[in-house]
Amino acid sequence: LLIVDNCKFINSSSQGTTGPSAGAILSLYTNVSVSGSYFENCFNNLSSSSSSMAAGAILSSSYGSSHYLNVTNSVFVNCHAIATSTSTAGGAIVSAKAGNINYNIFINNTAGCRADYSGNDVSYVQNGNVNIDYNYWGTNTPAVSTTTEVGNINGTLPSYWIVLDSEINETDVKLGSDYEVSAVFKVTDGTEE
Image 1 (spheres, helix red, strand yellow):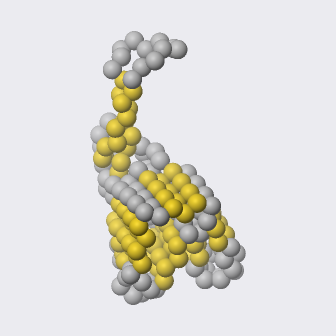
Image 2 (tube, one colour):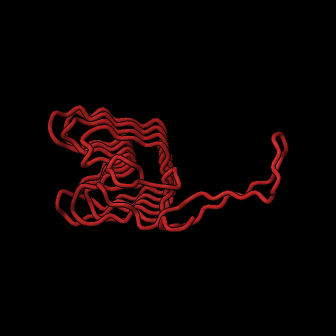
Image 3 (cartoon, one colour):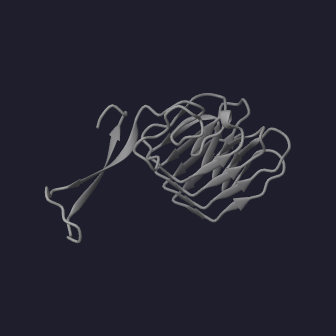
């Protein structure tokens, strides 16, 4: 079991030429638990000519065994993965394991490669189900239908996600005046306004 708790990965990078690679954490054949951690400007460039996987921050794979990946209460900002056209990439996370990726913040993560197995925030490729509910995707309207949008694992959308709602108690707002604005994070399934 690999446990990563309350850690920071800033400007971490990898320049892989073969096999799976990740900008911060690469785990093969083991259970992984990441909690309360911060990933910023993590970068991975996989230049392999063979089909493989690349993640900007975390790549966790078990290749058919029954391991899991759990990521909670963590932040992923400006993480990027670039891979060959036959590879799988996730701007923040690639998971080839079952698990839970919940209560995280994903902002401005990108992936460049084969669109049917890639996601700007999270990409999932096989071996069980990954629950991606209750995350903030850097937008109040996560992915709609394509695999390259945010909040999306190969076309699977989260059932519930976090949105940012703001309120001002003034009815007559004037330019140049100061007002108190309340910001609240809340859960939605996309049916509420």
